[in-house]
Image 1 (spheres, rainbow, N blue to C red):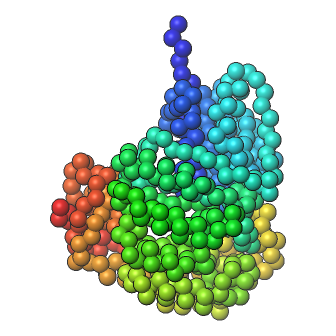
Image 2 (cartoon, rainbow, N blue to C red):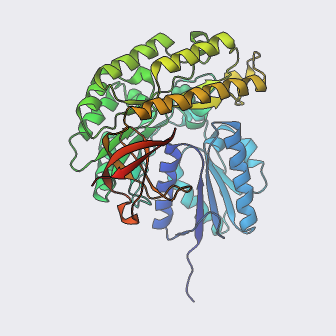
Image 3 (spheres, helix red, strand yellow):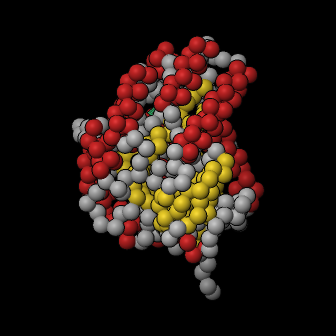
Length: 440
Ligand code: SF4
């Protein structure tokens, strides 16, 4: 009789770190002879790598788990990662979930699954977040997409911003060995990856657990020496963690994308203080000025939380004025939603939902004009565009990104996917797309 491989399906919620980890876990399942199937198909095991950053993310994690059980009532459904780590009791009380794991030992999920499939028992023990002491060295061996790859270099956060649940879900800062990062990046380049994104829960804290405050800059310096690395991008990083050498490296080396995502969160010092953010609006502005002095065309994107407890017309106006002055190329607007387990959840000066909606609408309107303004600087220019795997659903055009994260639409055949092309940026299509033509 032919022994059929067991089928496993994966669903990832949340950030780039989660995406990286799921890919690495899939590799381990493949090494253990599982067949990987689409999440909508019938599988023997469903693994949900969960997110808890907002109430909606947690609720979606629960919904997906229930949906998985409905696909195959005899399957094993596991919820792992941030949501489980921060709220183990809440997750394990859901009847459709067969087992849970937190933010550690993700490489061991497969062992638990095998035990359960063999009819053995496993424990659902979750370590306290403070006990997550070691960096778990996962690695992606088989890439599902070679256009762009996330490389996780750090886990955890010690900052405890008052609205954020992440430190409780990811534990303290733990950094990956530089050698392990370089090896993985070399392998990815060998497999044809065009763009690498360095990512972490708190990227700029890389190395600080080992007392090395310049570890990220040192790593970036090392990466300039790799052959055939075409593009390197940093994921979100705190403005306070950008140093002069890092700015010089980005300015002087073509492999670094001139794009930084620096979360501002608010333009009001009063609100920044309540958020427990470690800078003032003036300090943030100074950082941006230093960056632009060396890299004038750089795209600087940001996050703003709208309607934090205590926000009022005056503090919100300060935010609007600052974002206009700093000319962000894109703002991610997050209407405040209190996350249970954080200090902000207990704050009693919360805003009415309608005011938060009104403020968010205003900021989104400004974001649109800032995006148009940034786009306009590049119309008529030629830029290298990395063509993506997926076409634009609405127009059917190929899509791609410039190094400074402008999204481009071009006409062309499928064999241009996953290649870097010289494109003339012809005209604005809408505030988030430019229409271009391929030059070569
Ligand atoms: S820096 Fe602040 S917002 Fe970012 S993960 Fe840490 S606590 Fe959360």
